[in-house]
Image 1 (tube, rainbow, N blue to C red):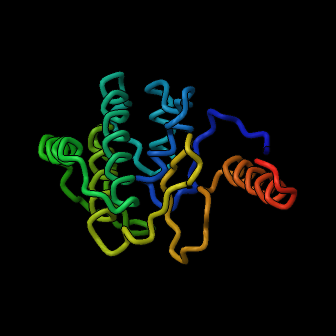
Image 2: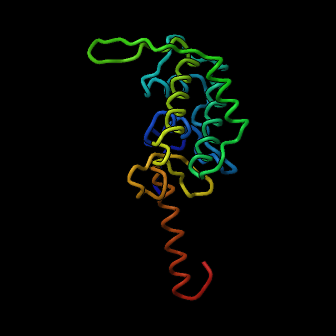
Image 3: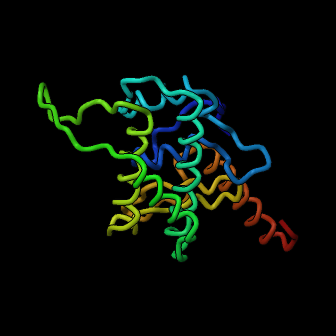
Length: 191
């Protein structure tokens, strides 16, 4: 297994909102890895996504980010599993979007861009809107979930060829397990 820093952010899931889901590693294990442990870490993550707010995030923003992340995770997994979305998660997302308004103001200097969000909540609204667009449009068909039971990370797989999430650890564990199962089958024993 590759030696990776468990607290390192992941930016390889294919969209900012999916990268938000990856801020909690091994989310379905007994020992999940919280990568957004402090408001400073949230600020660092938002900066990478070009969503740094004018006012630095605080503890309330961190709680809001965690809640949004877990709401989006439930909705993403329901979408990937082709199951009806849980009404409570849909309600939470509708409420979040209704309570936070981040109107679109564009700036054009060296390139077209949106103005900086005023608060972390405004940045999170932008992420939530991206998720809604993705989950409700044709792009939802390109979403896939890692089959590792403790990961279940959601990522974009447009060609439909990827089996595991972009984490090298998941692919490595999955391949080792598959190799052991093949060897056990060849020898007539149990894996």
